[in-house]
Length: 309
Ligand SMILES: [Fe+2]
Image (cartoon, rainbow, N blue to C red; front, side):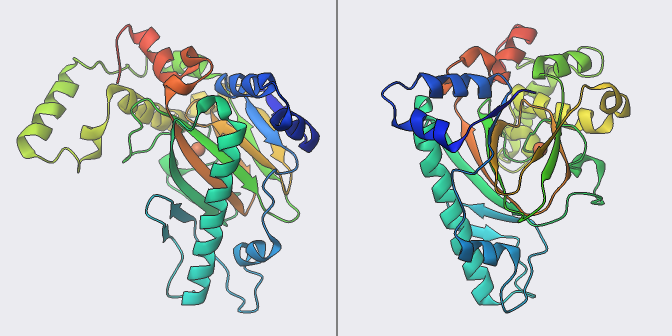
């Protein structure tokens, strides 16, 4: 998977210059499955905020779980209220709010061609060591996969994630796999079928949702054929030892203090080791792409010969 490293000088020149050609090119690279890598993050975390996240305060409190921040509701989940004081909970909440806002502000400028045609999704803080985590197969992060949300279908909108390795000394170690179309090709039509909007399953789901009025409550009924396929692909990749064994793998270590961004619903990825990472997710309208044909919904529609959302 191509990694495009962007130095602070290049970033400054691109953002300050009269022509946005460089930014347009970076968007195209991102959409084509590349990773935009900032060896020095453009969004340094204030030292006091880092202290809160790394648990180095005098209270000795440490964060043990992954933490989610929902910007639309200004809501924080995952901080253990029993073992953390109210003060810590509020501090973490403030830090996450600031982080989310700073990424949103930066990307509004950096991804100018998208004109903010996105939904600001959740931010997360991942304080857990990734190496050796004991998780059920579908929740494992160390197996190559593309992202799909089980309960929040994107209906073709793309999942863009901005990461930041805030570990003071250690790298965050990733592996990426083959391009999206190639991966899909290795699962279809043999192991997976792209569901059709007029298929029996889709029809049955729709009528059941209508009859019961529970459309919003059962995740599968909220999914478009696109979402259904993306969920199945996520699961199939993780559960297929053969695929994990033969898929091309590229290893990369993200330096302490670096940031990177990637469309994780398209780029097969896994995290092998690392601790203390921040992340902000955006759901981006596929129509906003500088290369709209690269969006996975268009790739799959091309393969299936029908609309999927
Ligand atoms: Fe993932």
